[in-house]
Amino acid sequence: MVLLKSVCHESWPLAAAFSISRGTKTSAEVVVVELVEGDFRGRGECVPYPRYGESIESVVAQIESVRNDLSNGMDRIALQDVMPAGAARCALDGAFWDLEAKRSGRRAWQLAGEAEPGTVTTVYTISLDTPEKMGASAKANAARPLMKLKLTGEGDLDRVAAVRQNAPNTELVVDANEGWSPDMVEPFSAELAALGVTMIEQPLPASDDSVLASLAHPIPICADESVHTRDGLSALADRYDMINIKLDKTGGLTEGLALKREAEAAGLGIMVGCMVGTSLSMAPAVLLGQGAAVVDLDGPLLLAKDRADGLSFNGSVISPPAPSLWG
Image (cartoon, rainbow, N blue to C red):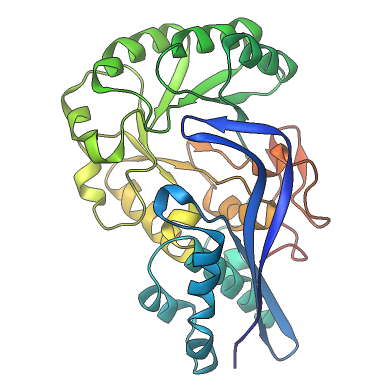
């Protein structure tokens, strides 16, 4: 019998304030779940996100609400129907995968029928700021092969130009977090292409993105806030070239793997991203990120301190998780 041993809120200070178009944070606020079955335990982590109507309190309450379902035999597959996609299901799904791996003596990738994972190279995110400060941050990280710049609208071209000047050899992708207006898409994408930017993430609000189907853009555009699960994926094919799969949106690795397969079949490129969390949040996403065009799993690099059993980073290169961390 699988039991919910614990569900708790943890706060992990960031090394520096992190800003996007919607605001600034100074810590990663996560919820950690531990499931047990006999002598085996499995852990999962999620990051509640206010943009999707989530809070620490609401996610903890969601997880607690299935305590009886767990003791009555609910497994990972049944979880997909019992709980909606989102952070709460993500934590439980991750804990189920970890528990199954510990109980069976097999790694999560084997349980998923996937090839043994290798290393992945993550973007390094430059927080939204003035052009001068973003340029200085880029200079300090100019040896990294790939950076993602948080943008917001006005002044973005100056921000990217400052970063490009200070990191001339680094591949750049940008993320507007729904901060642009439709009239910015065509001229901004043309200018960004000239600056060597290779992807634009979620330029418009998810509620207003249908106009993208009629806007020229020489750079691939990637959906983030506009895509959560397989539901509605087909409607995005004429608007976006890629999708960003985040496990906190899909409700965990189970749906994340299914979404990846369906998106690839539809001809969409794959980005695997994250909220700002610890290595426990990133671990299942490293499996999902195998073969992805863009991997954005730098959350632990933004923390003042990660978990003791965290992922191994060699610059921007992430090794697969050890069993002591997850899976």
